[in-house]
Image (tube, rainbow, N blue to C red; front, side):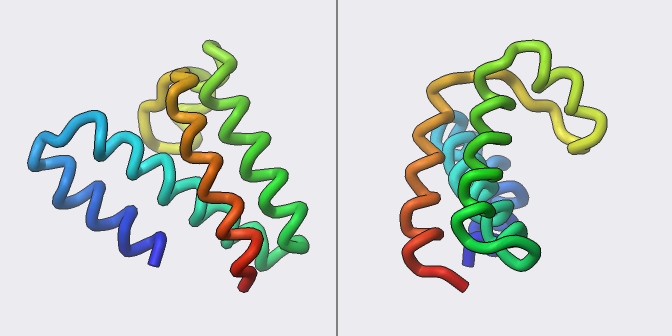
Length: 97
């Protein structure tokens, strides 16, 4: 579901020019997808903690987001308001695989 939301958001909704809404939706869906993918390799708790730590670092350490942009293939920016996306990790953890 999160992958579908991410794809719809990035390929349809962003073209509609919804700005702030699509930015937050990308963050929420992206964090959920990363945590669920990590959950295949490590246990659910570790997956959620790793996803949260990485997202927190990307959004709060100014130089990190610019340095990692070529690896991610997207331009990111440090923005602490995006940390609202971490709330999605609660249902990801509770729902499990």
